[in-house]
Each structure stands twice: as C-alpha cells, then as structure tokens.
Length: 191
Length: 397
Image (cartoon, helix red, strand yellow):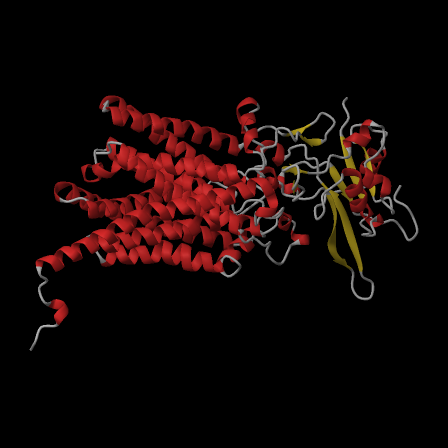
C-alpha cells in the first residue's frame, strides 16, 4: 500500500508559541507577510476562575477530496499518491480560483512567483527522510507527522486510541489533518 | 415693447458666422469623442502594464479577497457580450422587425466587448502566457476551464457570424444565429457556475448565479442596445431615424421587464440568505445591506440599477426617448456595481467563518487600486473606439 502522509495535532500540547510558523518561513522562504501554517484559538472552556483555552495548529489540510485540485483549470494543483496536494508552479496561471475555493483559506498568492502557493508538507525534507520543519521545531510536540496508511506509525496509533475530529467535515473535503481534543490527567501523557 | 437685441433676426453674414462657429464646435466635439477615449485607453494600457510588472502590489486584492475589480469587470463585460448576442440571435430567429436595425450592431459590439473582457482578465492573471496549459493540460472538473473554453469558442463563432452577415449569406447566417445563441447561454450560465460550484463560499454556492447571470445578461444587453439606438437616431433622419426610434422603444419595454425580474431575484436572494442565520451566508448578505458594500448595493445596484430606470421608463411610458436613454444609462451604472457586489460580497467573509466555533466577527477589506480602476476605464474606452471604427468600416444595415 502506498504512503498517505498526514498530521495528528495533539491540541493540549500547543502553547501558541508560533515556532512552527517561524520554522516554515525559514525553511520554505515564505515571503514577508504570508504564511503556510497558523494557530487559531478554539474558544474558551470552563467557568471563571477555572478557564482554559485550546489552540489549533493548522496548515493546508492536504484533502483527499481537495476543492483546489478540482477547480484548477490547468491541473497545476494535484493530489500525489503519497497524499500531498502539490502545486506545479510552471502550470499555474495565477487565476486564484484555488484560493477562493479552499474552505480553510490555506493558500496565499506568492508575490514574486505570481502563483497560488501553500504548504507542501516540506516534501524536499521528506525526500531526505526528515520530517516537515514545523513538526521538528514544535516545542510542545503538538504536531505529529507520519504515514496514515502504516498501522505502526505514531499517527495511526494515536488515531486508533483517541477520539479525533477534522475541521469542517460538512465540506466533504476529507482532510489529512486530524485533531485530538482529549486532555491527559495533570502532568500525564496521552500516549 | 422692444425686442431684445439678441433675438433680432441675424443678417446673412452674421448667420454664416454663427454657422461656422457651430460647425467649429461640432467638429471639436467630434474630435474630442475620439481623443478622450483614446487618451483613457492609453492610460488604461499603462495601468495594465503596471499591474503586469508590479503584480500583486498594484492590486487592491489580498489572500482573503483574491478576486477584485478586474474579475468583476470581466464578468460585467463577458455577460454584457452574451446579452447582446442573445438579443441579436433572438431578434433574428424570431423576426422582431422593430429591432432589426440594431441587431447587426449588437454583434459587432458583442465581439468588441468580449475582447475587452479577455484583456481585462489577462491583466489580472499572474501568468497570462501560461494560458496555453488550458489547452495542453485541461482539467475538466474546473468551472473556469469550461467557462474559458466556451467563451473562446464563442468569440470565434461571433466573428464568423459577423463575417457571414457582411457577405450577405442569409441562410448560413440563420444557422450561426442559433449556434451563437446556444453558445451564449452555455457560456453565461457556465460563468455563473464558476461561482456556484464553490462550496467554501455559501453566498455563491448553488445554481442561483447561473440563472441570475443569464437574466441580467439580457438586461445589460438591452441597456447597451437602447443607448446605441438613441445615439444612432440622433444622427439619422427619415426612415432610418424612425427605425432606430422604434427599436429604442421596444428595447426599453424589454429592459423594464428584465429590471422587474432582476429586482424579484435580488429580493429572494437576500431573503433566503438571511433566513435561518446560516454563518457566512448571512454575514455576506449583511455586508451588502449594512456593511462595507451598503453604498454600492443600495445606492447603485438597487437605486440607480433598478428603481431609477424603472421609474423613468414607466413615467415616459417607454415613448419618451430621453427618458429611455437615461433609464438605460442608469441601469448600466447599476449593472457595473451589481457585478462588483456579486464578486466581492462572496469573499468579504473569510472562508474560515464556516467554522461556527471560530466565527469571525468583522469583514475582510477590499478597495480597488487606482490601476485596477484605470484598466476598467481603459477597457470601456477601447469598446467606444473600436465600435466607432467598426461602424465606419463595416456595413451594419
């Protein structure tokens, strides 16, 4: 079976430090003012004074049913066998249809290349056997990366063991990023 | 009571002098009707080159609002082209004699307007030269691919139709009227589907825009033909003048019907979008009703676009030519904002608003840049200039 790369986000571990964004900027030379990944706040929980807040790290969801791939007039956006939604810069006409069609607002317009760019799961690092830069740098270990088709991978084990969700399931995009919202006991670990 | 000096009958040399003055002013006005559009076209080309060179920096768009005024202008021009073609084809197929005199002119205008639309779209694209991949690497699931391909074929068909008209082959022309009518309907409804197929933008998603764009295409086509007929009837005397005046009254009646239909469609779009408070859909509608698009919506799209032209046509019973002209001009201004509102409202609410838990309270920002505005003005100037040249060289009667 071919690989299917994906992320599992351990939400309780994200401290909103944005190191993932900085690492991505440096690794992929993302232009100033643009970003390939982000952290959003997921509301408040509990009542005062026992309040807590969740942070959801995100990037391109590398959807199995990616709207950006369907709408691209030249096939510049495509879904690879390993699950990565890739952009062929040479074919991109810069019509921005993919940017309008993405329900996660995951794309940005590259001002110099004049193409609609996005997260590539650091495919150049994967080719060298390394993990994406955002995963390597994550301080709390909130971002877990791996092969969703490999039952022995860490991501598969986490998904088997814990309840998880995807963002905007009603859009039918079948994202490759899963969120585990569960929290361990004080000082404990989910794994 | 003595007659005022200015009202005394002029002597022959004075009359001649006055005649020369009038002629001088006329030729000055005539010259300015060429020079002003030419100057504006030149400015538009400079602005277009600036956008191509500077890219995103020269546009008012952002990652949250990727489509701006130039996309709205493309929609405006492409849809107006389809409207003109539909009127021309239907007029010929159904033998609407009162409109006959403007129908060939409608085809010439349609071709010119579509070329201007393509030029506007190419300015907005990051890499227009890579459009070649639309041919060599097509993606048949893409709404833009279908829209672009059908409009491309449609442009060729329109040129063929005009050529056949010019050569006077009436039987062949009849076949072309049917072909271009089918292509016009296909291209226009496909353009609506470019928006309707986007599930990430609830304000756009669904079949509404395909139908709306088709109806408003005929409306914009009728408005343009009305203005054209008014201009022509001023130049022409005798039978030809009467023919233009008669067609002007007929197109104004059609325009009134289409204005009512558009008003009804708009009312139900707004009502259904607000009903139930569906996130993003409701917020996009509120952007139109009381948000950043309130002035373009209420004043221009509804006020100048629907109410004023309807009042003028009804007040003049479609018989008063100047009222009809003002109605058509007013509705054309409204149509410009109608397209703008349609394209921008769908994007002012970030797609992330689909997630209720992280709902975004405000609106994204978009204001067209001066370069974008100049490109649109340049495109309209090109249409005026190219049509006048066409009118001069082609046999359009």
